[in-house]
Amino acid sequence: MLSKIRLSNFRCFEKVECFLDDNTTIIVGDNAQGKTTILESVCLLMRLQSPRTSKIRDLIKIGQSNLAAEGLISDKKIIFSISGNKRKMLVQEQIYTKRKDYLKETSLVVWIGNDDILILRGSSNERRRYLDFGASQLNVSYLSALKAYKRALRARNFLLKRDASPKWDEIKPYTKLLIDNGNIIAEERRNLIEQLNKFASEYQLSVSGENEELKIIYDRCGGYDLSCSFDDVKNDELKQRQTLIGPHRDDISLQINGVNASKFASEGQQRTIVLALKMAQSAVLKNATGNDPLLLIDDIFGELDSSRRNKFLSALPKRSQKIITTTNLDWLADSQIGPYKKYLIENGLIKD
Image (cartoon, rainbow, N blue to C red; front, side, top):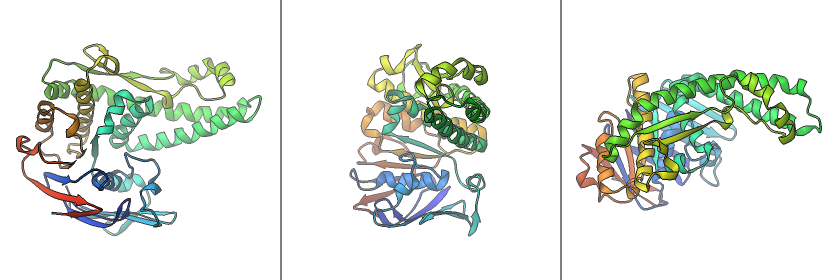
């Protein structure tokens, strides 16, 4: 359990500290007061990434050059800090140089927020981010493969665009890197989707209260033989001057009772689908590790009717630690969430 969080120069906060309940911590405040930033800081501390930006330096308070996030998890003191161009990870005052070693000392995380609706309505990039966040927590080698793939992709696209007649001998080594790392990424995504499907329909049913079967279908760009597929698209890549196949173009299709959910599901169904996807992610992580992930729930109750909201809260794993942000507590009386600690946040200050 994460029992304490302390921040310095993190977005709107100069200094802030709060203690967290083992079961549920609720952070109440108006919009733009820093509620989501608290959740974001926990995600950074636990997983070394933010759900809101890919540029960690964006998290540093304007006008400052350093940032620090500190937590107490299972009585271990963990710290992530940035000073100038240097980043530091510490556990019990010991410096960790490798992400994977630091991440073994932290907690798994599931982020649940209003923007999750983009998994259904947004671009394929949103759906790949959903897969990547889950797969990287299941297998530490996934993130390494993903980073290597992205580096090779940038280099390959540069070479395709650089010359009027691309030099395929120069491009070939990067194609091999895409194939090797792409196969790792695609296999992990396939495995993750297979596991997600075991739980997604169950959560869809429990939150909606309706007989709704949710299914996730993997749309793998390039098929199962990337080497042959690259040969097949060589002429098209020559014309378009970019890499046309591979995991960077993968997608998933979401179906409800056999039809395309983004086109035919109602507003309520769509909101329930994204909740089911995140709850399924939580169940997969628990099934793989034996530990319930930390749930970061960001101000979602205004978009749910009372029936779906209460069913969602009832479906939350009882042993998961939860941090919930909200603009009001009108929903709390009927929630039956158990013991909780409450904070009020206003103008960058947090108080009981």
